[in-house]
Image (cartoon, rainbow, N blue to C red; front, side, top):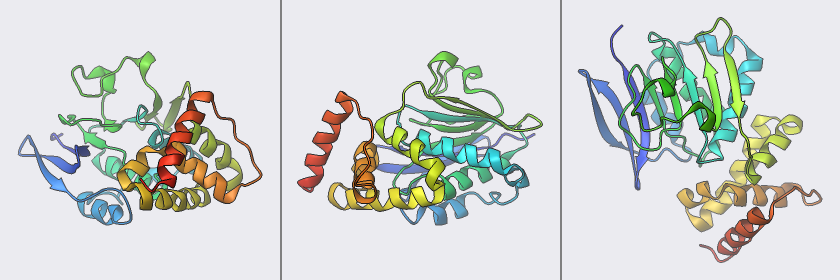
Length: 250
């Protein structure tokens, strides 16, 4: 099986896409992966994205995977790590495309990589590899099993498996998890995107994407005026500062 790999990540204000070419990683600057144009970009970058029927075989698993990806995207310390076989590039492309199309809010960018070798890229959080990341010492995302926060997926099993490890959810994650069951992912994402768009108009897309608690607060204020959601003292202070910045227009 030949070596293959692809990734997309941010370095400062610039987004890069890279892939293995002639056995070496080649990267080039790429357009913004936040907003409405990212799926058009992924269509061009992932030519095998539609050739993996395994994604659609288990609707319950696929729904759980999308929900997990949403929670991961709302915490910069969380990751989504998927074990695949070395001959499953088509599955890797289909997973990346599906999660961006169906699970990730428009402003959230989850730096991703897939392949038989992992790239020297910063901040990778969505990883698809034939090995567990902890089996590859020296990678930029190497963490002990006990310290990993997020979700692990095994696509090599007869039935795909999903394990979650979120020891502490932040305000945005708790809000979204609590609303997933009654509203469903599609409706919830549309409400989140509307609130994120409002935050982005005042704060800019990148900063709004970082202020996930603020977006959750704006979404609740717009759609659930009579509901109360638990918030810690630290989160309340952070929300207060973000809300003041939002009110001042950045």
